[in-house]
Amino acid sequence: MELIDLGLAKRNEESFVTFLDQICSRFELDHAAYAGTNPVSGAIHGYVTYPDAWKRHYAENGLHRLDPTLIMASKSIAPVDWRRLERTAGYDTVFRDARDFGITERGLTIPVRGPYGDIGMLSVTRDCSVTEWEKLLRHILSDLQSVAVHVHDTVMRSDALSRALRYPSLSTREREILQWIAAGKSQQDVGDILGISHRTVEVHLRSGREKLYALTTPQAVGRAIMLGLIYPL
Amino acid sequence: MIIVIDALNKDRFADLLDDMYQLRARVFGDRLGWEVEIIDGREIDQFDRLDPAYVIGLDDEGHVVSCVRALQTTGPHMLSDVFQAILDGEPPLRSATLWESTRFCVDTQRLCRDGNTMKAVSLATCELMIGSLEFARRSGIADIITVIDPVIDRVLKRSNNAPYDYVGSTKQMGKVPAMAALLDCSEERIARVRDFAGIHHDVFASEDQVRQLLDKRHAEADRVAIAQAEAEGTSVVSAQQLMDYCREQLDAARTEEERAAARRLVAVLLDNTDRPGLRLAV
Image (cartoon, rainbow over all chains, first blue to last red; front, side, top):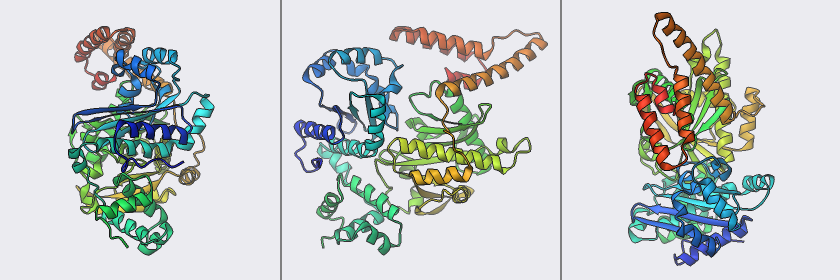
């Protein structure tokens, strides 16, 4: 299943939660949650697929103030498997309550750092054995990293000032690769034309795609044309 | 052996980080003559305050022999903030699956003493490369962009770990030039380095293993210091005893108030010690 393009969807709470739902079904997860702070607008954003009862309990008891899956994980650069947090402050309190609401402690938080001191976290859970969990993570973690940055960047652009600050800044290399792709060339062709390795094309294309807040290359090409960064052919 | 230190376990390994900052001062300040700031024999910059992840290599006695620092390219990092010159004015790559690695270094002095040859240096270098590539791969990272000097670039090439490309161009940074190289974190690359070095075991040590090793090393150093002090007729509390006591106090604290009180006590105790690493270690 394709994920909806958050860049085009009307950015409201409903579309973010729908996106999280889609992440769950695409990556075989039970729940997904995003939390982020935007120092530019001063806003704190949070979207979750958790049941309402747990959301209410979490908010009423101020669990976000001690939840190590947010507080500790936000300081990491690598994804944090919640097993790593078992001995940290707040873990027992939060997960004792979570278990009562049927929320598993088999989870992972992907921290995202943005350019303006903004920090976001995409957390996902799945109630399963350790073996199954590790196998799943090996399979999906790279894609989840990209999805986490996509959600974060999109949420961080929800006000006009932040959107202006985050105008995509593409390098010459990124632009020329997108330009050749727009001309219908395959990645292999582009590598041959520019005399660079397939992997170099790939790493620049991925960067260009993410700078344009796109999940797929066609979306990226479309947006680059729209912004006048490359020519339509 | 390799250990990864980040914001989640840095309090437990502050002594290790302190050793690492000293190694960096010796390598980047003294040997390479980079324009780095060294205070108290330690090289620490603005990016160390951003909670990066460090991949650190240790010898069997628990001395830091190699290290490298990783940051996400989605947020502030060296290529976006201080190494722009290398990129010829172009904006840096930014991707969820691309990490930047900087401050790659190896303690050639320590590895070459006792008549050891460059073989030990090569082995330590490869172990660090394997550790960094595997750590990145395990985190879902596909590529690494690494800021290195031409010497390290040659080392990479000689170790079956040649960069697949470079971004920007080589620029003079202090006494030596620096460049930005691209490495994929593929299983094939990791296998190539492992084959080259003949390293086929798991290079990572557990946190407990490393902690034990460090504690043993400190205890040994303290024994020597105490013996010396006693010979001079002065009485001392060993740094290890002091550190154990401080840890006990922190571990025993159950509430925020208790923890704050324990931290205050620890601060007072450590203000009166002369081991700089200890202050950070608790």
